[in-house]
Amino acid sequence: MKKIRAITFDLWDTVIIDDSDEPKRAAAGRPPKREERRILAHQYISRHGSIDRKLVDLAWDTADTAFNKVWKELHITWTVQDRIGVALKGLGCTLPDIEFAELVRLHEEMELEIRPDMIPGVKEALEELHGNYRLGIISDAIFSPGRALRQMLSDAGMIRFFDAFIFSDELGRSKPDSSVFIAAAESLGVKPGEMAHIGDREQNDIDGPHRVGARSILCTAAVDRGDGSTAADGTFNDYRDLPDLIAKLNK
View 1 (cartoon, rainbow, N blue to C red):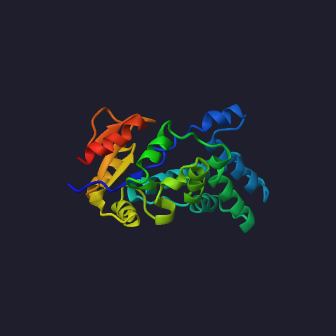
View 2 (view 1 turned 60 degrees about the vertical axis):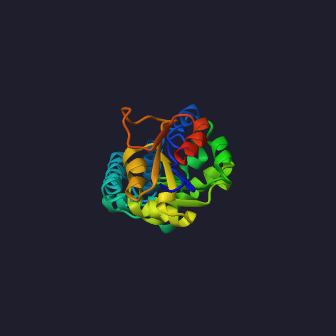
View 3 (view 1 turned 135 degrees about the vertical axis):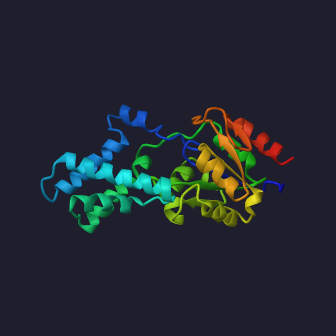
C-alpha cells in the first residue's frame, strides 16, 4: 500500500461543530437559522405585495426538501441562489435583482455573522501535520458557500494549513461522488491511493474515498453517528490522537 502523502478533511462536524452557533443565536435573542431564513424571505417578498407567511414557509420547506433529494440521490448541492429561485418560482413571484442578491447573501453569510465553533484541538493537529503532508478540505456547501467557509477558516487562523479546497458549490458535485475525491487528489498533486480522507459520515467520508482507492478515517470528535462498526481504516475522537494515527497507517 502506498504511503499517505496528503490528507483531506471534511468540514462540518470534522473541523467545525455543526449548529454550535445556535446556542449563541438564542443567547442573543435571535431565532434559529432555519426560522430566520423564512423571516427574511417573508420580509423581502412582502415589500412587493401582501403574502401569508405560511405560504412563504411552505415554499422554503419545499425547496429544502427538493435540495435534500438532489443532494442525497444525485450528489449535487444547489447553490443558495438556485434554492431561493426554486422557492420564489413556486410562489409565482420575483424580486428585483438587487433585492434577490441581498436575500441570497443574507442566507449565505448567516454563519459568518454568528460563528460556529471549531472542534477542540483541531488547529494544533493541523499545525503538526502541516509540512509533513499536503492538506485539503472537501466539504459539501449547504447554505454557507465556499467563499464563506474559507472566511471562517481564515478568521480562525487555519486557512494557511491547507493546499487545496474542494467545495460542492464550486465543483458542481458533492460527496460521496468519486469526482470529488479525484479532484482533491489532483489539486494536491497526489494519486488517490496516496491520500487519506477524514470525516464523520460513513457513506460520504468512508465509503466515498474507498471507491477511488484512498484511505479513510472516521472522526467522532464532534458527533458519533455510528453503532461502533465502521469500514474506516482508522477512528479517533480526540484530535491529539490524529498525528500518531496517520503515522501508524503509514507503517
